[in-house]
Image (cartoon, rainbow, N blue to C red; front, side, top):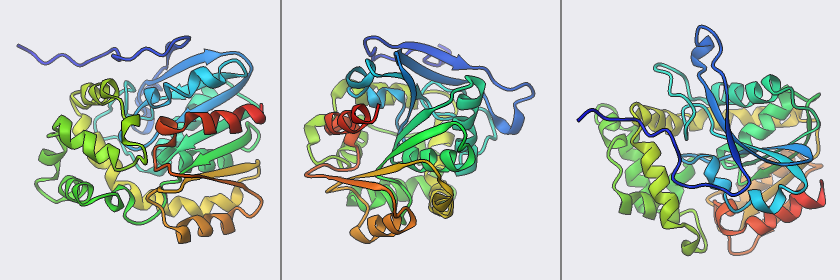
Length: 293
């Protein structure tokens, strides 16, 4: 029986509708169709997800903020249900180009960018590129330090090391048992129960898309480009608020280094929380966003 690519998520967030930004003609620089969720009314707010996740990462946050913002939750290039383009790059500039395409194709202005992990880095670099469109940035647990997810546990180090290994890496990336994915993701949580079973199932469905293992491997390989992107932080003109979980994979020295790059930024540390604050403490993010609406 031929493999059929999943086209619809198994999770529906009340009040959201699904939309796409069309691919540029000729697949300009490997750019394909982008999928995003939209909800609410008010000034635009763009949500940018983490490594190995998708727009549904913000399932709990969106209903808390959609009465004050028009929310756009993007599936980053090749991730979630955005198009996988063979040969495309997934380094930081390429992913940033996808975010910028959302803002420019929809002609969004006065935008709040809120990103977690990889999405936080992209929020900051997009703001540096498009200062005329960005109003403020909420950057949650920026994924811009050596080691990344491999710092979370021995299991994560083994999995990521296998995915990145020459030769066998593509094979390892295509094998993702549910218990392993669940345990790796729980390594980013202070409250392990915040990882819901249906969300893991949704991530596994996306992981079964043809070509997705190549994307997943390329995203892990992109960490050096995310670290290099810190050089753009000083170019950000809009107000920034840095948010870190107390138990995030970043070290105090990593957090202090970013505070020095962004000396005017607000700073919140969430007690007991890990890397995936949108999963375990969406109320904290909603409070910061709604207070600034």
